Length: 140
Image 1 (cartoon, rainbow, N blue to C red):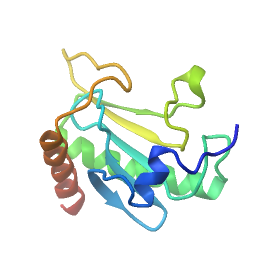
Image 2: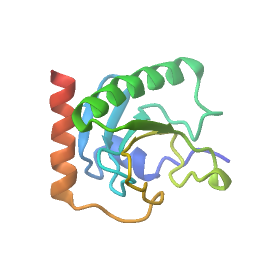
Image 3: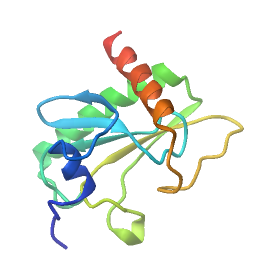
């Protein structure tokens, strides 16, 4: 399969679709998942065009992993979860629904079930508040 430059994440990178951004640098962008599996569910994507883990060049993947760790630490600070899942899907059979490589940072809370992947849209006000909490943790 080839990379589709009209996928939703490519459109977010080009500013064609809004996102609740929490972190951006020269190589990566992190923003709230609009269909979160839990409070604080954040996505991290590279600014390079790559469909999945197998398509991205190693240098870009390294920067993506570093950014994912950086943002995940802020998510952990902002939401104080009992654990955190870092997830990356490759192709539909594995659960990938947007074909631009990305990592999910999914906080996990004791006694709370994780929602299904790509199911229910979150309230925009809640996403804005969650994004602000993560930005504050990154600034601190």
